[in-house]
Length: 280
Image (cartoon, rainbow, N blue to C red; front, side, top):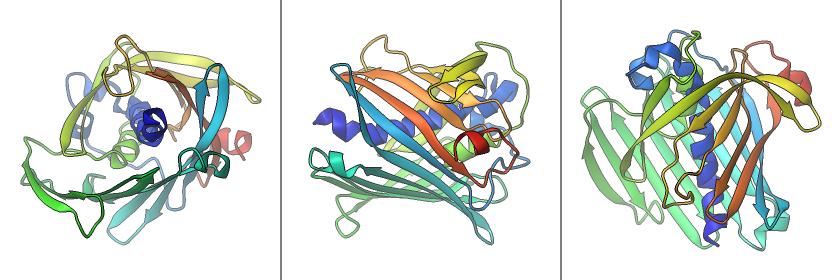
């Protein structure tokens, strides 16, 4: 049961890690959010869908889907992520998750973030209000919005949430960088500040089932043991090498099996891409 509960949350971590690619050489010794954004890599109406598989005893079980959507408002972008389990999986473990991050158009730094999730019998409401200039954060955290308690945090610098980090990192300057360059990211989630460290393995032609070979960037994030990972586990992430920087395939073992995330469809990408034809 703990495996199932972790799948959707685990996917958000995977998506966030995969898009760290855009940090490039600017992030050598710096955090990704310290790099200015001059042009966003997405546009109003972009929609990206992933299919999540869980492997148990050598059988790949389709568990659900996660959909990423961007909407442009007058002074901000509204970035949403919705995770659902398939009906065939609902009887075992039903998932209905909704995440939304609102980010400033000026710098893509989050203004507020909210998640409202149902995972089996687990229910959680979590809302973050950011004062990035003064490095203050207010979190409303509880089972439901009505029962959520207020927590105040003082931060040393600006931070990202799990959704805004994906779009922010996709939009950082497109610079060529050295293989194995270290990249770091600060993210606030679940009343904690996380530092994510990524190793970049460079360009690779990845063979995708039913599609063929696609030019990708191969990334391997360092994993923290004790949650769904064991000591020495390695996650592999392949990201499209075009300017959209879309994660295509993600694989990793977890404590009770393994997980695979595959790109299912894309709509309204900002930049021309073969992905549009490959993933209709």
